[in-house]
Every structure is written in C-alpha cells, then in structure tokens.
Image 1 (cartoon, one colour):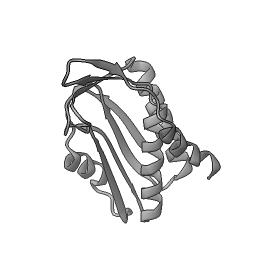
Image 2 (image 1 turned 30 degrees about the vertical axis):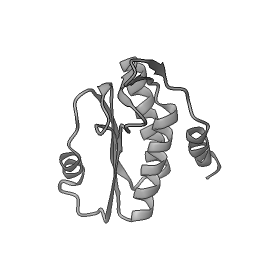
Image 3 (image 1 turned 90 degrees about the vertical axis):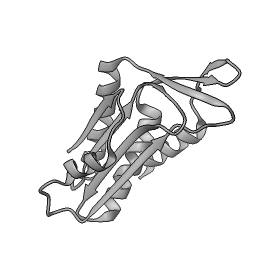
Image 4 (image 1 turned 180 degrees about the vertical axis):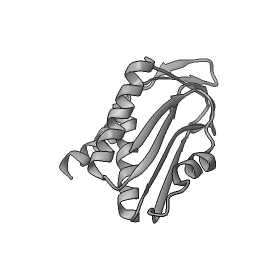
Length: 150
C-alpha cells in the first residue's frame, strides 16, 4: 500500500521513513525524495491552492496506480499546500520494497504523476511585487508520459 497525504505543515522525513519501515524485515531498500521550493531569480514565495477532496482523491489514485504496478512496494506520498518560501520542502515521497529497482521506479512514477496529475493551482510571488500563476510544463508532461509506454 502507498498512502497519500495532503497537509499545510512541514513533514519530518526521518519520522515518515521510520514509520513506514517500523517492524518490517522484508524490505531491502528505501528511497526518499524531497522536493523543495527553489529561489528562482527573485522568487519570494509559492502558494499552492487546491480543492481538498479532489486533490487528495487524485493523489491517492496516483498512489494506487503505483501500488498496482509494483505490488511489493509500500510508501507514503505527502504534498504540502499553502504559502511556502524558497528552501521549504513541498513534497515527500518515501517508497520501500524488497529490492531497490522497484523502490526507485515507484518513487519516480509517483513524483512524475504528482507533478502533472495532482490538481494544485500554484501562484508565484516575486521580489518586485508581481504575482503569476504557474503554467504546466511540457517537460513535466513528458516525464509522466514515459510511464504510459512502460
């Protein structure tokens, strides 16, 4: 099982990984990915808006797809919302399996699809006082599309 969560508050990577691995002796690999807000040329903050029921349902659907593809994988996917500043963690994916290849693949799948398939609306605030909505990126769509071929 891979569980999805949505929250405003920061997460603790070590605590999340420890909770996932607690009491498990069948796992041989754990992969952790933390996405951070970048300070791109004067970015002051990134605000993520969402419709909670829809966003969490879509996140869990993505997690369920990963679990179906890699049945030996367990995991946690957490995405934050609200106003975040450069350097803050925005997303966490922790996957574990008996073998590393499935843990890595599931983590990459989750990130590629969370980036493109989880319904968030992102607004950037810039040092000069301007704001703008973030548009979808073709590179992110391409990364997710590769899983349709695998």
